Structure formats: C-alpha cells, structure tokens
Image (cartoon, rainbow, N blue to C red):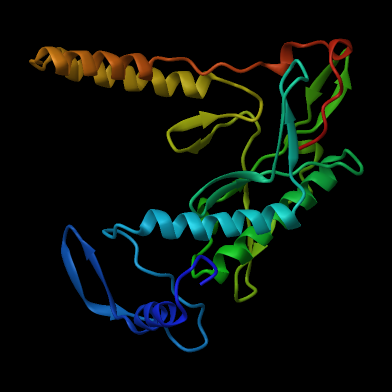
Length: 262
C-alpha cells in the first residue's frame, strides 16, 4: 500500500493468495494433490511464473529487503588498485538470492570476519522468510580471505589456520544448519559467472573455453542466412571476451596497503 495501491485492492489480493490451492506442474503433468497456507506456518508468497507484473512486484519487495539489510549489517568497502574508486556493499543480489559480504573493521581478524558473515547471512535468512521465501541451506557455502605477511609478501591463510571457525544459520523454526566451507580459490557459480575471491581466472577460462567449443561445433554444422551468421559471430565474440581484474597475489607487500580481512 505504501506504493499507492488501495487498501481494498491489497486485501483482496492477499486474501486470494492466502486461500489459493496450489498444484505442481512439470513436464510429467499436473499433480492431483495441492498445497496451501496453513495456520501457524510462514505465509506463502504471491504468484510466480507466467504473470506480467512479477518484475514490478519483485523490484518493490527486493528493494525493501536490500535496504533493510544494508541498514542493519556491516558489509565491505571494495577499492580498485589505484584507490580512486570504491564500492560499499553488503552483498550482490538477484531477486531474493544474495551473495552476502562482510569484513572485520574492528580487529582485522578472520574470527571477526566469520562472525560478521554469519550475522549478515542470518539476517538475510530472516528477511526472506518474512516475505514467504525459503533459505536453501544445501545450496549455501561460505569463503574467507585472511592475509598474513610472509617473506615480504602477503599470502592468504589456508583453512587449517582457522578450521575451528564455522558458519551456522537458523531457519524460522530455530533449526541450525552448518554451512559448507568452500576453498577461497574455488569459484562462486552464479548467473553464468565463475568468480573466485582470490581473482583466480582459471575456472572462468575453462567455462568460456567449453562454451566456445560447444558454440563453434553447432555453428559449423548449421546453414545461416547473413543476418543469422552475424548474430552467431557476435555471440561468439561475447562468449570469448575475457574477464579482467587485478591479481593481488603478485603484488609485493611494500607496494600496496595491507588489505582487510573479508
């Protein structure tokens, strides 16, 4: 209603959603059994696929959730190598999926960083539960970067240096789940990207190479019109475009400021 919808229209929509019986439809057909909102359970969200107003509804809902998360959680400040540009954020999100970020501004230790990432992730889990979504714990993982000085360079601590630290998140019933730890040199697969916290580009290169091989093999055996051939070449160009960002591991400690733990 804060966006201008009348009270009666909002109540009508909410009542319809709450009273709806929902079936599951897949390629195998539509389920005979259905599910609906039950008293005492988290309220179900609204309609999903197949509706023209989903983008507007998600934009309003996601904007509010992201704003609340930003106001109540400590994130990170990311700076470019020259120090002329920076970005402050608590994470990167797409609809209700979010990569939560946290740092350790007080003690500059991995212990504080892990505590903050757990707090931030827990708060996001609470927020999406309030709007009828669910936190898929089995899809979650966490990574941590902590540097130490060694031989004139800053190197990243390995997991055995903080193996006693874990991240736990509770669902809306209070059940705690231990979140999987992923090595800091492994990629975060999301929205077609494979970016590593350490700037390791090998996983991204391997994926791009596989995509290029698949695309070229299909192009090779296809007869195109001129316009279609041009489109295929543009797609191939975009697929092979490299992702470039600096690799901090190759910089000597004396040539840069000591980074904060994340």
